[in-house]
Length: 408
Image 1: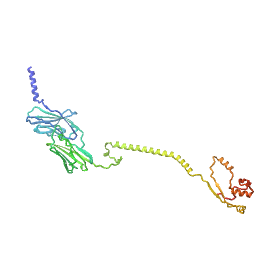
Image 2: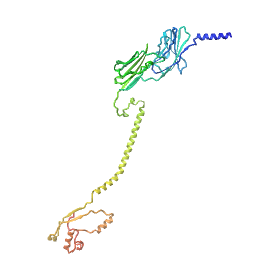
Image 3: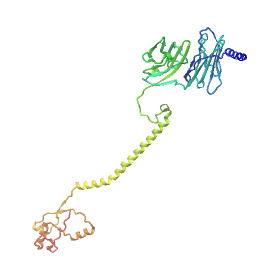
Image 4: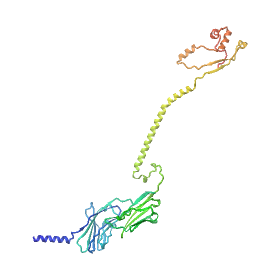
């Protein structure tokens, strides 16, 4: 019984002496973009005046279960380790037991859990704090805006605990060697736009959360250039630079496939070009089909139109009678002595062709010559005829026309 009590007492003393009763605070979580800085606060508040003698920062990830040293601090000496060299530094105040770590230019490989351990002099306990860091894709460092539009430029300093912003500045430069202009200045809870930006720049970020974002209104061509944001947290400073490119507004023009450039088309240039070509081919096929149908309709209408035109011509041009006079130049001696020769007129009527050739011959054989009454009477009187009604009564001596008379 006595031996058991001694074993329990020795175990308790060992636990206390080894510092297994460490002080652990809740885990904090931060999310930053690739390339951004991040402040991981690790401070041990105590009522006793004990100096911080040792600080260790370690990193672990899901891919690597083994802890890697990030930085260690001992006897006023801070030493970054491994791949974190030149990217981390201790920014806390050692006299205030503050071992906060600043990580610059965060990378995707930096995503994981960071553990801080602080040891005080004459203190067996260890103060522990864990920070889970999530790294997301990088924000665009170049912003494009059309002339006359508005644009917001972000500037946020990520940290695990609130630290009051002591000063905020936005500065503009037109190039590497361009003149620097103050855009906005914030101090003592007052913000003021400066110079030509006075009526066009406004602070829209929440300063209490280390957010110094601004909005620029009525963008002008001369606003193209670099904008640098600087956030001051006491002696700690955070900077971010954004390149702004202003596009001039131009009148809309007809865009053809040849005029499209990779800058205009972006990643969908192949899809746009294929769509335009297919649309053009489809419209051409429809146009050819319409022209063929129109030509076919005109061809079918031509014979009917020609027949109707001929019929209308016949109606417009009525049947005409042709009259001609026949002058008798040779007169017999009897007619000359009698003094009774006079001009003879003949009437000519148009004759339509018969239905068949046989009918035409029969009609021609049966037809009897007709002469004018004046010529018949004169002939019958000379040859003893009594009537001019039938010229054949003269015994065939009276021809149908006077001999030698030309017919016109």
